[in-house]
Length: 104
Image 1: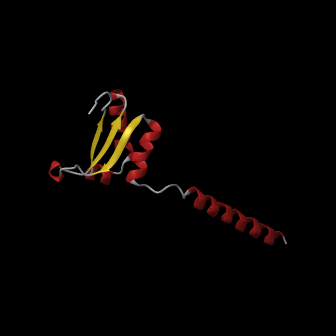
Image 2 (image 1 turned 180 degrees about the vertical axis):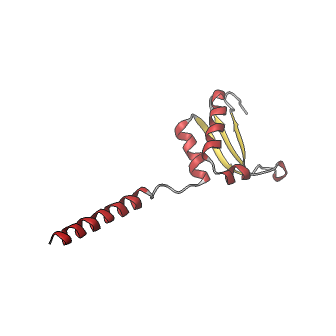
Image 3 (image 1 turned 135 degrees about the vertical axis):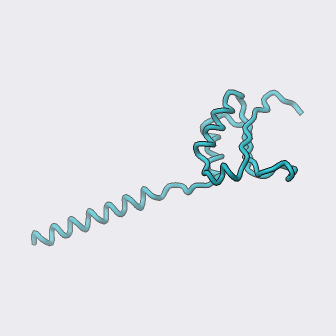
């Protein structure tokens, strides 16, 4: 009886550990869009875009972020450098700028 009790407890502990690992491992998968969208939660952003320049001869694809405050530019650039994958940093040109006060 005592042996069955220990085996039952052992199996229960294993099930709990496996369940905890499974639930803990289900975070949102990485994507460039997720990282760029998270900038909106941390900084005052007017717009963001992932894509190509209008003129393809201008170079690599771009991640463009328009911030309200010019002082946020370096913070947003650092945030993107820290959170984008190395592949994304190699693939995209990062362009953080402020168009505040510019009228068209």
